[in-house]
Length: 354
Ligand code: SF4
Image (cartoon, rainbow, N blue to C red; front, side):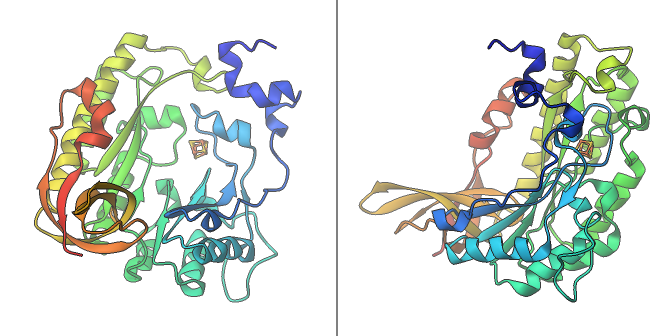
């Protein structure tokens, strides 16, 4: 069967003859037990679906309403992963911060139904060396949330999708935040969590985005000191409100804006990395290759999402070591090359002190 390109987002639903509104509304299946495969990081899906209606988003349409996995089930998977040797648990979900809103039963005694209760419960009930949160919508958080970081096992990394730095564009996107509120939230996070890495997503060339609105986004990105940013060139998704909007931006303009934003993020990322030169930090090694009889090349992440490489005297895969960060490798490059090269050119070279 041949499927047209513009139907690719509906591939599974089309083949199974399902309507997007009813697609994937069944109970959540258990994730495989990641620890049994000895993975450094275990991605534990705690939630699926979304009740928001961002006008560009096909995910909420395809995945249906938000559904949360009960805490005992989440804890069981985390314990299994830790038993298998995993050192870092990453909580994931389509709309992660909404965890608990649909739950009323199946909970563990003594814990509430807010996402912060889930995080607190995992920290209390498990001995995970690291707990990382994946993408969180900014409107789900408040300043009190950051008190959780008093537990140092919680990684100092917040991925807060921005999508646009223009209030007008955010309204057209039906996002539930504004640039001022976003900036205030980030300020609260930085006050509560020293050296926290704030990463984000931005869409370039959303329908109707004027030059002035794009400039607002660019200024906002330059001011925010992001540790990293992903730029998505707007692409209309059939079935979304944005795909039907007037003022679709020419593809060439969308690509240009993407490149400008990527360059801004590359600068911002480098500035963030430079702040840590000379510091001692902990790294969880995710890969290791033998260089010679005398040494191993190891690479991994700090809790605040700095990618680090080092030479160690033994393979240190899946170990957490203290290192001193001594040099920054690679150049930000031009806007086109930096997007491709970001993973390889922004490594912080460091000398392990293991
Ligand atoms: S972008 Fe995120 S919050 Fe918005 S509708 Fe899609 S999944 Fe939900």
